[in-house]
Image 1 (tube, rainbow, N blue to C red):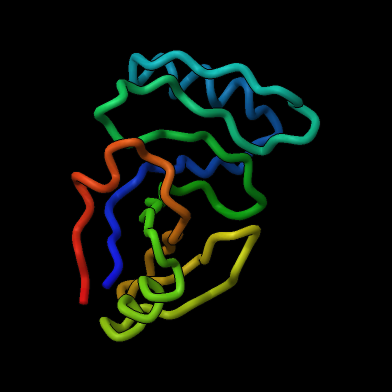
Image 2 (tube, rainbow, N blue to C red):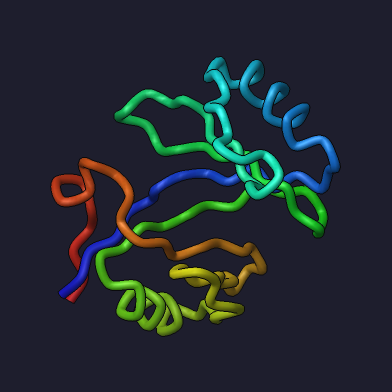
Length: 126
């Protein structure tokens, strides 16, 4: 048995101005941007969302802008297999998470557990 749940939303931005994109989304969502520890190394800016809401990150990407979801799981391999059985396909494995594509074409990621409320809120799968 393993568990999984929606973890957050990643706003992929094809831009050279990640900080500008983060300022826009922070203002649009009413959630201040978190400071980056090393702007030269980080392609992400997190927003300071309420603790009981999914996380939101702004990501600098080299593909067309879009939004994707992250699904957190306590067993990434089992979650990938479960979703493949539903028709998704594995696209890539990157630094501890897996990029997948739904049968309808949307990309999404399976990531390690990040939320404090994971155990109490996650779905259990056989």
